[in-house]
Image 1: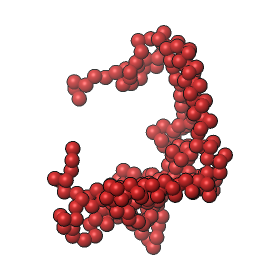
Image 2: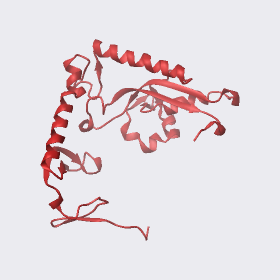
Image 3: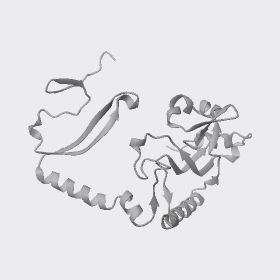
Length: 231
């Protein structure tokens, strides 16, 4: 827009468009530490040159930096990527990157959580459903995933037709709702699903259970009349 404000940032000879916030000068920064360095491709295009991304953090005092570093060190001791394998809860394998293996101890915890969530379904009047893992690409065209999420989907050809593993449960619940005519008396309809989802995340972005390629999502959708929506 013509009346928009443009913010520029200068660091030595480099001038860049940056929304900020900015400090008047680096004198405000009394303590700094580099926390991480990683490779990154321009606009996430792996065919482009790889860049080095450096992460750093600053504080107004050295004491605040030390306190931060102590909290981070304590958090690392409790990191599920460390605790999980150590207590034989979960494991990962290079032959299935980004996909967790739930070992017996972990499976017990997992199933206990599922049982608890099912109790919440009953309390909040949700009905559990089970939906397929793979759908014809036509569904993903209708939902918009084919236009906006295709690069993050696992695709396969079956009898000259393209299918995709579902990255989200929403379209399958919509198919269920639209499978027949509904009476207004049936609404609201609350559907819940422990659907298995697959998302083709970049290998460099995979991280423990927080960024994976295969996971199960406790997902719910409510189909209701407009007058049943509360603010």
